[in-house]
Structure formats: structure tokens, C-alpha cells
Image (cartoon, rainbow, N blue to C red; front, side):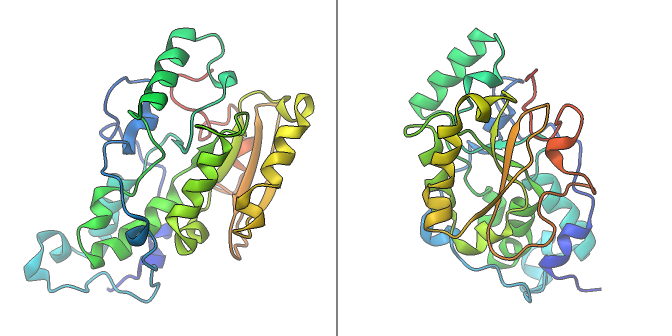
Length: 253
């Protein structure tokens, strides 16, 4: 049986995984920071939905010689993480008194030890693997951006990341959130949310937003292109799940 990359999302995506994140156990957002910075030119290679997994002769790659189902399982294990991938530095509300962790992570972002996510190395091995694994990376992961900061390491970093990955990859996103752990952030600082609505993600890139805030957090889902399944995760809106498990980092309260 030959599967197309678009069929990858039919497979289970909530997989227990502990091998990606280097460094502190509480900093799984660093999971993809070790990958080399990709070039905007490469990141914008269109994802062709009609590209089969077996583009290259199996003799050229042991991985491509495996059945398509096994290939997809391997790609999913490598490019997905059970915790959100941080696009910029979290707001202080995410730390809830964990001052040492907040200080250390603030230093890491400032020094460039932690950066906005890059495409996993696996997606840059060959065109066949890229066409199958890159959609999984963008569709299956939760991407989280803070919006309490305006410029450096804040909202504008998130907007630049969205611009850099290119239109095809933006439209593949299924769970990109502007997020604040403080469930009353938008009530206390409505101007910050308005700044999000006025930013380039919507003005220049045509993004749309659905507010899914709950008693657990302020969460604003952003999507690009036409997508009917917006805001859903296993039949439930992520922000309405008890404890918001897929929007919180490991160690967040």
C-alpha cells in the first residue's frame, strides 16, 4: 500500500517521548534548539500532497525500504513532542514563583542558547523523507507563543518565525497559539491582545484567530488558509481540557 504524506495525520500522534530534549529536564522546549538553523529558502519548499513516500529507490535508503506505515511511525516519533514547542520566551506568568528557572531560561533566550524552533534534521535528509515528515512536524505539534512582550523575544519574534517558515508550512499548522498562563491577562491588559490582532500574522499573512481562553489560561488559536478542523484536539478544544496539558510545559503549574 502506498500512502501519501497527507495521510500521516490519520496515525496516533500523542506518543510518549523522552529522547529529544537536551539539558534540563524542565526545559523540553529546547527539544529542537540543537538542530542547525535552516535557511528561509529551504523552509519554503512547497509540500506536495501528491508526492508518494517511495520517491527514491529503496536500495538507496534502508529507511525508505521499510513499509510506508513504519516510515510514518518513525517520522512521528522523531519530529513530535508531547509538550508545546515554544516560539518565543514565555511570559513570567508561566513560572508561578519559580524564580530560578525563570532567570535561567531568560538568560538562555538572551544568549541564543534557546531559539525559535527550526525544522528537524530528519526533514532535510532528502526530498522523499521531507515531503512525508515535514507535514507531521507542523500538523502534529503544538506551537506556543507568548504575547506579553512586544519586541525582543516577544510577539514580533513569533511573527518573524511565521513569516520565515513560508506560506505552505503556515497553512499546515494545526495548533499555533498565542498563550498566557494568566487566565485574566486579556482582562487586565486588553492592549496586548489588540497588538496581536494588529500584527503581521494577520495584516500581512492573512491569519485568522479564534479565542479559546478558559479558566486555565488565555489561549488564542491562529490558523492560515482554509481549515475546517480548527481548535480541535481529539474532539476537544485544547484550551478547555482540564489543566490544559498540551499547552503547558513540563514543570509549569
